[in-house]
Amino acid sequence: MMRGAIPDLKVEVGPLKLKNPVLAASGTFGYGQEFSELVDLSLLGGIVIKGLSLRPRAGNPPPRIVETPCGMLNAIGLANIGLEVFLKEKLPWLRELDTAVIVNIYGHTIEEYGLLAAALKGVDGISAIEVNVSCPNVECGGLAFGTDPDVTARVTEEVLQRTDKPVVVKLSPNVTDIRSIASAAERAGAHALSLINTLTGMAIDIETRKPKLANISGGLSGPAIRPVALYMVYQVVRCVRIPVIGMGGIMDHRDALQYLLAGAKAVQVGTANFVRPQATVEIIEGLKRYCTENRVSSIREIIGALETG
Image (cartoon, rainbow, N blue to C red; front, side, top):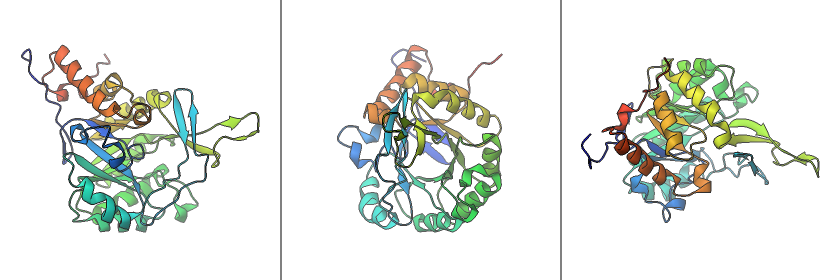
């Protein structure tokens, strides 16, 4: 790499072409507008919008966020404005952004996933769909879709049959072996995988002797989960051929580089957005510096470059 040359940060995640590998994670960046006065959104590789359901959802009662050592628990309950309001009020603004817009969807039946995918088919301004399979499946006693390889495959197939967008399946870490779930999504035709979603946890107030979350349990995120997430990404990259997007506790460019070295094609930044709203842009700048200082002409040289021998 010539001194003074600008490193190439462009990556491809299956059919999805990104200007850089840094995405804002679903549920931590709203619909983009909330951060638009603090962050130049055009600098991002992409935005994954807050999880979208067919109908508006109020979510769980408060308290629903608790700070923990090196992280946080959230039990927001996937509160969102619903499909109709999103298409009418949010998408026209998102469509004008010079960055990839990925819509995260969830349902409580396989049919709901299919209906959402069908409603987004042919809609301009959407770069891809991210399928959250960590939701409770009401048809199977409330177990999460993503804890069963066969059910994960059925959800993936349903979405693929009813959409014209690239499909990314977001995996839950709350399983015995995440590789079996990843392989099932790949066999069903997913274009890419993203992992991990939050780890289930809880916190107790010893004074009141009650759970700190009204929902009792919540999803743990932040630096506390990074070693677990990183190892799961490492495992999945080696058992599938489709691209992997890594996430979990990425606070700076050094954290992002660990995921890229492990084989992730891109990363999503979540909890860091609450701590430093400009974290995503700072990470992009950090990746540029790293490449320049190490004479790396393209970030793609870093991906999968982990040496274990």
